[in-house]
Amino acid sequence: MTNMSSPLAITMGDASGIGPEIVVKTLAKDSGQTVIFGSALVMSEAILLFDLDLEVRTIASPVEARFEPGCIEVIDATRISELPPVGTVNTISGQASFDAIVAAIAAAKSGQVSGIVTAPINKEAMGSAGIRYPGHTEILADYGGAERVAMMLVNDDICTVLVTIHTSLRKAIEEADYDAQMSAIRLAHEGGRALGIPAPRVAVAGLNPHAGEGGLFGDEEIKIIRPAIEAARASGIDASGPWPGDTVYMQARKGRFDVVVAQYHDQGLIPVKYPGLEKGVNITLGLPFVRTSPDHGTAFDIAGKGIADPASLETALAYARRLVAARIGYNELEGTI
Image (cartoon, rainbow, N blue to C red):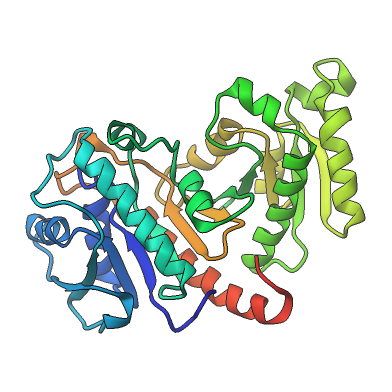
């Protein structure tokens, strides 16, 4: 249950990457009503390392947060007892990042926080700790109790939703079936509405070059994607396509479409990331709570150097606040998104 009076949770991310740095840099500018799920030790070290005018207050629950100026509230949700090495894959950091996410999800499900903003994690580090999830989205779906979720990536020009997420291209082709198309189209519609668009224009990209060229380059568009679009239109969604993947984003950037449904990971993420990572935000659709994230990774190569740009996390925090406010009103009127 989303509660506007509850704070937002920010997870620390991988302690060996830039997560702690961008979190403290962001909160030094605008802490607002936020609670960090992570390690008080790591966050205190980040404040010292980057010479920020902040102090850490450790709390056991979001209800204990005071939101005092110059103070960040941290829930010790990890097993970290000493500072892990920076700039490298580390088992302790991988386990800690996972533990912080799971704790934040539990708080969101119980209404103690209004949503979650996640700092970057490292899949290899989690794997070294025996945690077999390909990314945030799958953890959120599993522990958040969502039957089906989708990634929505947004920047200043583009909004896109993925049919398939973290899987091989071969498996993505197999998994982009009719049900997956319908789910992504519906979630794209609801995601557009959550961003304040009353009737989002949803463009669905084709899977094959030239959207199959009438079956010449593949028949998935004819047999699977087009029937899903027609069914979505019959249900009242302004969906169109399938459009060629190499031109649909250009059309969206020009204002013809509000949301583009991409068939697989790189088809959707390359257009969003190409202009730069500073303003890109990842939003998870289909969860019973709001979740946003910066659109970049742990950046081990610059971790601990003080040069990480917090802009994408700042934007993710702004989107989370916007989505929480929209969700409250939408829930009261029509149900959940």
